[in-house]
Amino acid sequence: KILYNAYGKPYLQNDESFCFNLSHAGKWVAIAYGNFEVGIDIEQIQEKRYGIVEQFYGDKEKVYIQKADSVKEGNRRFTQIWTIKESYLKYLGIGLNKELNSFDFEIKEQIRLYNKRGEKQSQLSFFSKLFRDEYYLSICGIEKEIQIKEIYVEDLLENESISLL
Image 1 (cartoon, rainbow, N blue to C red):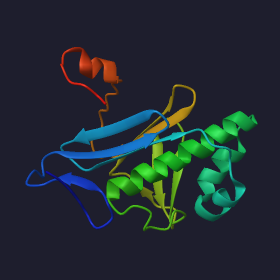
Image 2 (image 1 turned 45 degrees about the horizontal axis):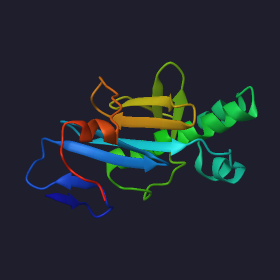
Image 3 (image 1 turned 60 degrees about the vertical axis):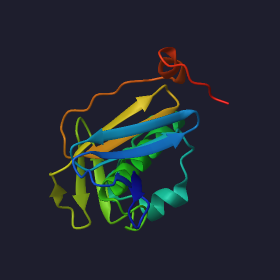
């Protein structure tokens, strides 16, 4: 049975060893699961909104966006950061109940989390990927290895005799 915490994060009743999180955007649904808490977000690439950047993004995130070499790349970076932030909040299980500018991500070969005082937080792993050139998918968790697998409704129905009406 699926239950929800006070902030809406789903979990399985009586099974603390299976953790999962869901996200959806456009025609895509994404799920992340493992033995430890996990957060996932998928978003369609959005136009950079300066008000959101100024109010909710940290200094490292702002620099990352500013260094984009085109408007398209700036929009990608804006969306990428948003998905990383949201995957982190979903990992914590608190939704948007933490100030989004109280933490800051540095995005290089590895994604690093910093608190408001600029101290690196190293206990978590972050994964972020441009997906289908129109979306960003980001995952936050403790586990270091992440596998991505696309499954289509047709794949699910191929070996089943069920009807979707």
